[in-house]
Every structure is written in structure tokens, then in C-alpha cells.
Image 1 (cartoon, helix red, strand yellow):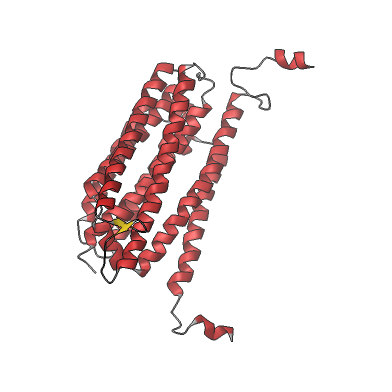
Image 2 (tube, chains in turn yellow, green):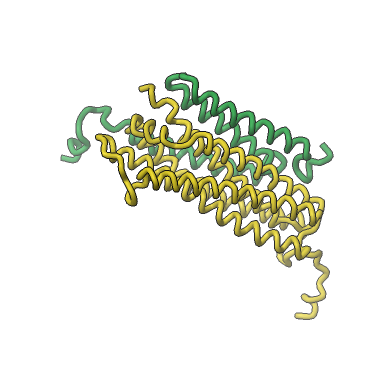
Length: 224
Length: 105
């Protein structure tokens, strides 16, 4: 019996419970989207909280936002969009089974991801320096200081969770890079590259919403 | 399209990338224009457009099976339910001008 299983004619990378490679890949993609639904709702909780407090305390949110650095936020937005392009190209190369191509684009994606985190590090440092970290160093003394603290709690909660996703993503990128270097992925078997791409693009989408909601809001501070 | 099976072509990726960069520049520019309450509407509209482009092309949903469409759609649907019901509660508090405890007696 064991012999039979061992000699069963499996294509490289096909788990025995699947009919063929397309079915296995479809299952992987469906599984990843199921996970992404939980991620959408996880970040959705943050966005709903933002929406509620923003509608309660618009002035404090405008003021808090006006202390965020728009050029750095815009720069990071572009960095993530470029990294989404390089990730899409890595997936594209994996469909061709182009090992070197996958590796080059994975490295570029990783470098861009690290660039994002370095910029974020400098942004966080500036907030600590100016005493805008609720619960740690908090300098604002004004009347609306508690509401301002709400904005910054959300800022650190949302961007912090996003940054954590980036760090996990870079860890997975390194793992994918090693597996690619070992020649694991071929034109037929490349589902891990593809579903990691889904994760990376999802993290990009979260930032696409964080940037206008947190950074660009402050330009209207002079308004009402 | 011959390439339908494997997702978009490199040319499509580059076009998607260019539109995402353009929309990023646009959203920054619009933020400095005074549109009153419409600043929010435009900013969220641009963000939703960018997200849709990423989902359809970079995440291959445009080329994916209907089951994948269903899952992606379910995620967005439940997100909207979360927003709609939470906001329906918070926004309508105080409309009746009396504390909720009034009804509990």
C-alpha cells in the first residue's frame, strides 16, 4: 500500500488530495481570499472606530492630522504602489517559471517594503520627539487634548498594525526568496508566490485608505 | 485575450501602475483645494477607485473564477454592513433629544 502511494505519478508540487494543478491553485487562492475577508474586517474595526470619533470630534481630528507629514506619507504611498507593481511582476515571472525573474522582483519588493518601514520609523521618532504619543509622551495641554489623543491613538493603532503586516510580509518574502532559490517554483507549481502577492496587495490597499484619512485631512484644518 | 489564463500582461500592469500614481498625485492636489464637505467624498472616491484597480488587476480578480469574485465581494459587503450599522447607531443618538434611560423605566 505504502509502495503504491510512493510510486504514484504526481506532478511536482501537487498534493495528493487534488485532481490537478489548476484545482490545487484555485483552492489556494480561495483559501487566501477567505483569510483576507477576516483581514478586511479586522482593519474594518479600526476604520469604523475612526469614522465614529471623526464624526464626533472633527476639529480635533483636523488638528491632529495637520501635524502629520504629507510629503513623507505621499512618498510612502508611492513606495507601496511601486512595490505592488514589482510583486505583480514576481507573480508574472512565476507563471513563466522564470526563477531568476522571480528572485529579482522579490528582492525589489523587499527593498521597497523596508524603505517604507524606515520612513515610518523616522515619522514615529518625530512624533515621540514632539510628545504626540498617547500614554507614552503626551505634551498637548489644550482643551481638546483628550480628543487629540484619540486621533493619535488611532494613528498609531492603524499605522502600527499596518506596519506589523509589512514586517510579517517581509519575513514571508525572505522565505519565498529562499524557496525560489532552491528551485521550488515552476511554471506549473507557483501558488505560494501568487497567494503571497494577494497578501502584499491587500496591505497596499489598507495604506491607500490610511493615507487620505490620516494625512490629508489636516489640509482642511482652517475650515470648519 | 490569449493571456487570460495567466492574468494580465506586463503592459496592463504598467498602465495600472501609471493610473495608481496619477490618482495618488490627484488625491494630494485635491486635498489642498477647498471643496467644503466634498473633500472627504472626493478623497474616499479616489481611494476606492485605487483599491478597485488593485483588486481587479494586481490581485487578478478580473481574471479569476466566480467563486473568487464571490469571496472578494463578501468581504466588501460585510465591511459595508459593519460601517452602516455602527454609524446608524452613533449618528442617530440624540435625535430624539432625550436620554435612552427614558425608555428603560
